Amino acid sequence: MAVAAIRCQDIRVVFDNRTGKQTILDDLNLTVPAGQIMTLLGPSGCGKSTLLRVIAGLTKPNSGTLGIEGKSIAESQHKLAFVFQESALLPWRTVYQNVRLPWEIRKKQSSTDIESRIQNALDLVGFKPNDWNKKPHQLSGGMKMRASIARALITNPDILLLDEPFAALDDMLRSKLNDLLLKIVDQTQTTMLFVTHNISEAIYLSHSIAVFSQGRIGEVIDVDLPVPRTTSLRSSPEFAAMYGRVSQSLARNAAQ
Amino acid sequence: MNKSPLAIRIAAPIGVFIAVAILWHIAVDAFKLPPVLLPKPLKVLEAIWTQRALLASGAWVTLKASAVGLLVSTLIGSLVAILFSQSSWIRTALYPYVIFLQTVPIVAIAPLLIVWSGAQFRTVVLVSSIISIFPIISNVTSGLLSIDQNHLDLFRMQGATRLQTLLKLRIPSAIRSLIQGLRISCGLSVIGAIVGELFVGNSGASDGLGAMMNAMQANLKTDQLIGAIIACTLLGILLFLGIEALNRWVLRRWTIDTGFESDR
Image 1 (cartoon, rainbow over the protein chains, first blue to last red):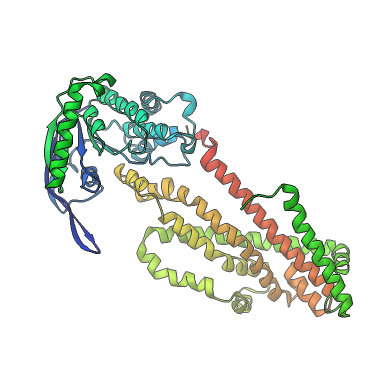
Image 2 (image 1 turned 180 degrees about the horizontal axis):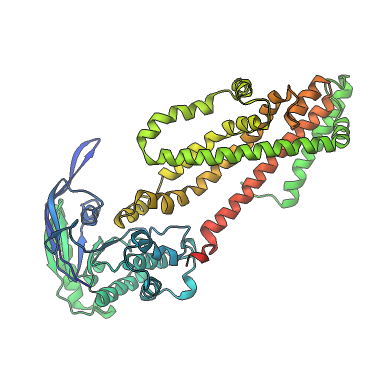
């Protein structure tokens, strides 16, 4: 699978509200390196999710250019997948059918291996075969999110965009799913852009963290902690030092 | 609200029914009301029993008319709603006329429909479907339009066509709204059928409950008339229970069991 770098140049998004024009992204520049996990970190309402939606093609920027491997989104053959804040599973479909949905809509790819691809994706996110035929309302929050990730993987995306996917989950579950994401990147070489406002999660997951500041990227911090990341890393002094550095950057950029 | 035990939930309404019947009986005696004005409850029961074959056959005709009327309004109403869901221009242009369907007094246009369509079964069905179509259109339209934004984004990101979004997302999402609409419309379809029969009945071309009631009124058979009213009510309840059963079936299929096994 090809890996892809994302380049955002002077991206500007202005929303028209009743109260007037509101600039959400203010000539934002950012490069996401290929095959890496980058986290977008910032307070609520700073434009993180909007940037993700712009890259996904769901929100049209007022100006600026967006490219993947030097090509515009439209002409690049790279596939994007999006994992939403809520699992966004269709309630009338089983887990299996939900995971199958993107393929049903696209239908361009060959169908010979689709069954095994669905099974592999469900296996990768930790679904046992006797849960495949469950409906979403029979699943816990964590299981729904696993199904949602499996659905995103089914089209073999080059770029995976995740919008605070674990915000509603408890800490134990969150760290389990963080490990799952690391495993996926390791196996698939997918470029991943991850929105969160949880500092620990950002450090644990990413190769680099982009800290938001007033609709721009205030600072990009390289997370030079050893890979693969393990649970013991969370209690190490290096992790604590990185936590201090990131939270200071967050405070500094929020104050500007 | 606290749920009372089942026995009380059944016994209490029956108790009220018996109490009302006794009061009714006493009142007829006390005020010396003639049977033409108000027959005693036992007299009504007797009339229902002796006319049971006639009432049952009338109820069957009316049930058919309302069921076909409801089916027609469900099909046409859902198609109109699908059309509405495709463009706000279409909605803006046509919605006033849908409101017209809701506000027009059905009693006022029933004679006109008979002039156009003749004093026959299909006219009764027509009246029934006109009166029951609005809740279907408005509920299904709102069901088709109030789609979870994440679901819409998911379809957009996969490059789904309009048709795919309609078939795989909007219509399945709107099923619950359709059932909500049917709950309201099923009672209306019975009203429509009876109103239609009342008008058609004048020509003797229908033998549904509405037409019978016309004749009973003309012959001052008040006991039978009340019996027919009770039959109409039971008919409405029957249709409502049918919709409730459909609702439970759909909910089970839509959200709980694994009814789509064959898709795999």
